[in-house]
Amino acid sequence: MSDTAAPTRSQALAAVGLGLNALAITGLFAPLMGALADEHRLSVPQMGLTATAELFSVAIAAGAAGAFLQPKRLRFIGAGACLALAGCDLGTMAASGWLTPAVRAGAGVAEGLLLWITIGLIARMQTPERWAGIFLTATTVLQLVLALAFATFAIPAFGANGGYALLAICALLGLAPTLAAPGRLLPLVEGQSGAGAPPPRGWIALAATVLFFSANGAVVIYLQRYALQAGLTPAVARTAVWVALAAQLLGGAAATALAGRIRWLPVFAVGTVLWLAAWTCFSMRVPAPLFIAANGLSGFVALLVGPFYVPLAIEADPSRRAAVQTGAAQLLGGALGPLMSIALVTDRDAHPVLILGASLLIGGLMIMIWLHVTFAVPNLRSAVGAK
Image (spheres, rainbow, N blue to C red):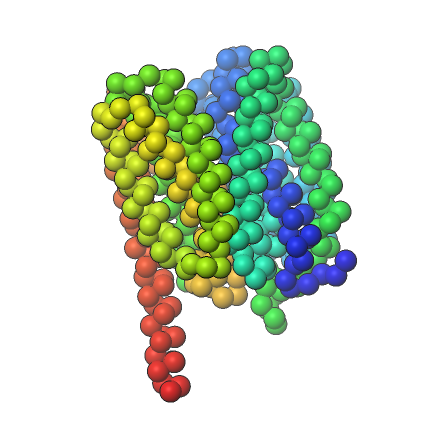
């Protein structure tokens, strides 16, 4: 198998297979943390710390790998990360209390390395947004399958250990894609090293990514509180969650279809408007069908814009070093959003977090517009000068 700057389709599919284990956990915290709490293995503060520790570990590991590791011996690194992740999943089955966040932080390091390999290959594709859409859609499908397995037999029959056992099996199955993955990757741009920190514009693009993910991460975790404040039942909130997951599949499919046919900025602009409309419904006393539809719209937008963070980063930083860091930035934002919301919400009122989310979202969009305008104007001047 040749190692090329533009990976083959089979190599890209292998990268997607590896990355599934990196992000599957992000949609499964609620049932796993809830089961550990029900078994008195975690307190409420320890639940939040466990999820945050794993997310931060993924982000730090993926970011550090992109900055300092050369994209070589990828099969070895991928296989080692899969084995380490399976070991941490099995180790979680024997952990409780403050040991659990430590074990899950170790799992996050392995997940971060897998994410680094996946994003590294996606960033080298001719249409990276299309492959990012395929990756996110496949991840959502896996999360749905695992969530259903957790709810129907794994957790009812075996408790939290049943869920982590399934995750360990998935990690071991991840060894198969390493066989089709490339052993190494050529530099993102000819003549440059495959590792290194992005330039300033790349960091700014990553900051916009963090703001967008922080906004959504802060808002979505309080869905049940919005429902209760609107006079609705917890059952409505649970229904809204499943509708949002189904809508995410539609959003991912739409993003994959649009990839290469539409610029990234209009996608983020439309996504911002749709998100703000959905979140406005959360702030009011609306009927249950409208509340459920609003969360479905929010889920649709999350996957619609998801693949376009990569072309945003590539335009800001043509060396593509920022593009390799987009996965880390997204996870960092997903962890920071809930942390920022802690000071704003109370048991009686979660609505202030909607203002936080809207502010972060609009701030991120303003940065994106600035990046695009400052990129386009010099290019336009150069084109006019050439004539």
